[in-house]
Image (cartoon, rainbow, N blue to C red; front, side, top):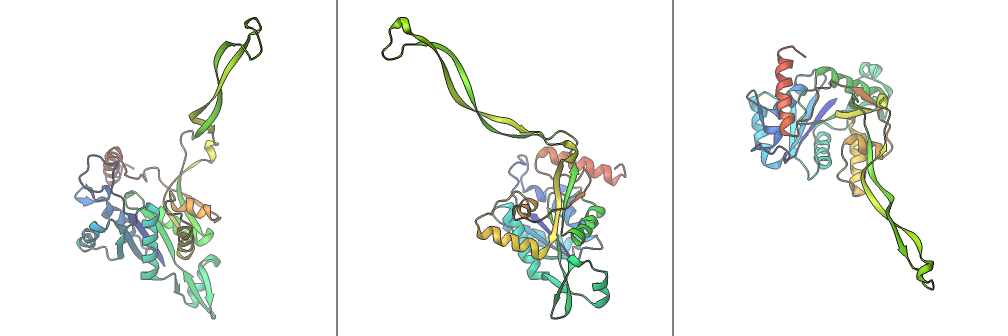
Amino acid sequence: MNIAVIFAGGSGTRMTNADKPKQFLMVHGKPIIVHTIEKFQKHPEIDGIVVACLPDWISYVEEMKKRYGLTKLGAIVPGGNTGQMSIYNGLKAAAATYGLTVSCGEEESKSASTNELLYTTGFAVERNIVLIHDGVRPLIDEKIISDNISAVKKYGSAITCTPATETVILVGDEAVEETAGETDSTRIGETSTDSVSVKNEKTAQVENHVTNVPDRSRSRFAKAPQSFFLDDILEVEERAISEGKTNMIDSCTLMKEYGYPLHTVIGPYYNIKITTPEDFIIYRALYDAIENDQL
């Protein structure tokens, strides 16, 4: 079973001109979150959808489910205080609603990969796959969803990326010795005629110092979906939370932190995340271009 967990728990503080959270802004008469959900609703390989959103907006999403016929939307749950905790709430709901595994027959088990199957008392069960996606990333396409599912079956993970088209630099703070200049100084026990020239040196902290320039041909921008076997990611989330780690930047960072190998799949450059007013303008332009078959 393939499940989409869509997290939309942010309040959109960077969308300064909006009077509502960014995931609920309207584009062509439909909220962004609905545009996103529909990509998974219409995909033939997606069996279920879970949305984690702001508690005050749950009833609104329930209304959208009815209005737009989002029949695969099986659970709508409150988001958390961080993106990671919103994802965790969604993962828990996915496990509660759909389970971690599903039983499969003899023919299904023959066609499944080794990674997909577990055997319990002689019966084969198939591990459920979860695609974790931003509610404000509505420009995914059918191919990238299919590629994520295929990669998890084969490799155990799928991190949607785009190749870097510009040079990436890593920055940090660095302590450097600064020389302020030379002053005459008379040391204890010396006469003024014995004075020597002493350099005034001090340590300064230089911010945004370039620490590394990775090879651009090997650099990628991580996007979404980020996909895993549901039991794997849920186990890691619970371990991290028990250790006080509740604000990891994304799921691939979390899984890498706990030693899981990660596999990438290449997605479209227009798979943008709508975070700022400028992103919203770009999204509307891209949406129109795609609808008019210009992309």
